[in-house]
Structure formats: structure tokens, C-alpha cells
Length: 317
Image (cartoon, rainbow, N blue to C red):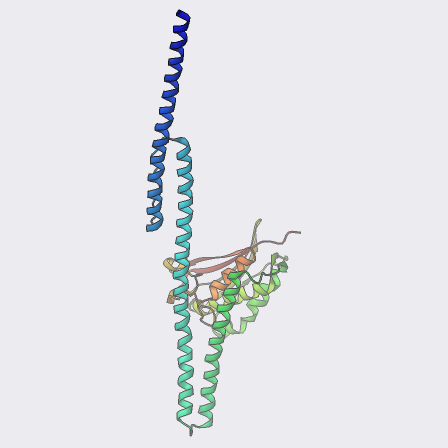
């Protein structure tokens, strides 16, 4: 009889323990379901309102905390993508507005000259010829602007990758600065060329480098002429090759330095206009350098030194 009672008591104990475990599991399940419901509601609100909020780690459930942490990381990634897309859309709208303005100006001039010629059939031949020259010049400005716009579009789409080979930078730098020598001396500007005798090679594309240096030297002449000197320096360190194009002109204010390479950033002091004034010259320059595996950096201290530095990968044998 005593043994039977002990068995009954043991059975009752097991039943109570199992009941407790089942109740605890039910309570934990119910609590987790409630927390998941709150997470769902909060997540829906964050996504619909497109806020920068995160989910609070309000639970002690370790598995649920891991899930909430992962969701917060996804939210951060999503918010970063949205911010980048918004910035890109604003940049594109601003760029299209600027392009429309910049195209409208020369086209209005062209139409004005054409109308003048049409309304004056007795215009002297010399005056007519002079107006036709101006029309041609403005039409070429429009064509150059359109060409640069499409060049930038091709660079950013990556449809035309640049073939990279060994390039002797000494010759490329010398050729490009000498191409502007008459322009520089004609303006009474000093030319400071520092190209070492020992050959320096980069892993690059010669055509792209020609355009990069043409843009930067043109930019220095156009905006740095009040400093009366334009320089080009070629140098190499252990990790990179550097080409500095510099002047001692009015420089670029600190507030603009972070945006001079933006598309169509056309504040007067920003310098972000190419030789033809399209507003895309420096943008194209930076994209070309990046497509070569390098970059372009800016340092500017007004009337002391403004330097655009092209950084490239050295050629390794």
C-alpha cells in the first residue's frame, strides 16, 4: 500500500511538472506572439511613413532580440538606399534644369542672329558673314555641351569600359602642358613644369589621361589666371602616382570644395565648368579617373595654391 501511494504521488508530481512546463510554454508563446504583433505594427508604421526610426529591443527573448537586430540593419540599409535615391533624383532634376538653361542661352542667341539676318535682306555682306561666324560658334558650344552630357552618361553607365595598359606619364604630362604653352604665355602667365627625368609608368588609358589633363589645365587657365602661374607636377610614392595641376588664383571656397565634382554644380566660385563652360568638365574628369582605378582630389587656399591631384595606380612589372 505504501509503495502504491508513493507511485501515485510521483505520478501527480510528474503531472504537475508537465502542467507547469506546458503553462510556461503557453505563456511564453502568447507573450512572443504579442511581441511579434507589436513588431509587425511598428514595422508597418516605419515603412509607410518612411521615417528613420528603428525597432526597440524591448524583449529579453534572445532569439527575438537577434531577429530585431537583423531587422534594424535591414531598415538602416533601406533608409540609406532611399536617401541615396532621393539625392540622385534631386541631382538629376537640378542637372536637367541647368542643362535646359545652358542650352537655352546659346540657342536664343542663335535664333536672334538668324531673325536679324532674315529681317534685313539688305544687310552688308561683311556684317552677315560676321553674324554667321557667331552663329556657328554658338552652335558649336551647344554641340560640345551635348557631347559632354552623353560622355558623362556613358561613363556612369559603364557601357564603355576603358582598356588599361602601361602608360609613360612623363610624356603624357609634357605633351598636355606644352599644348597650352602658347595660350599661357600669351596671357603673360608663368608655366611651372616639374616632370622628373626617370620614367614613371601608370596602369591607365592614354586617351582618358589626355582628357583629364586637358580639363584640369583648361580649368586652371580659366579660373586661376589672376595668380599669373599654372603648374604641373608629376611624382610617385610607394603606393600611387600623382599628377598635380595647380595655380595661385582666387581658389575655391571651403563651402564649395566638397561639391565641385558634382554634376552641373555651377556656382560662380565653384569652378565646376569645363573649358567650354558646360558644367560637366570636372565631373567627367573625376569619373574618368575613377574608371582608371584612381581618383581626383582638391586642395585650395585662395591666392596661395589650388591643386587638383590626379591619383593613379603605378604600373607593376
